[in-house]
Length: 208
Image 1 (tube, rainbow, N blue to C red):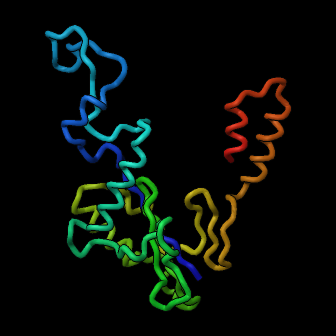
Image 2: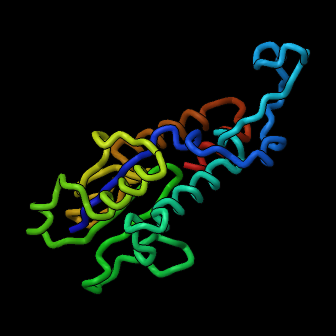
């Protein structure tokens, strides 16, 4: 069976300060009165983000890059996660039939998702406990000051909804979340029943 572990970082986009040389590229479009930002002598000024701004087209990629490096390097300490166990598009799947390849992890923006393949007997004992991957990740997070809410972590669960899918580790199945198909049919019928359908509506339906 497979056990799933998940943890989420709080305010991850706003934890890391960008280099000063980035400021001129991170200015917001609309200027504000200088008196509002401590520049009373300036009638209008442009405010720039000192952190990764959500909504910026490259924000997700940069946040994920930072997150991966935190876990892969662990500040060069013992807190790093095994690189060979990371899910990557340019490498074979880390979970195989080999006895030594029974754990994997992946980063999705500010989320860490980890999986373990165990025997059914062992799974009954391990359910609800923190995995070694999660403990190592928590240590890496603590060292670089990225807060989370441990009470919300998913601890070695065999059934979980993650990354848009419903995972059943007991049966070895991945399905759409409950109610997804009904909602999709309802949305499709609503779009088809409209007198005029714009491009955005079709993008929403086809994207799902």
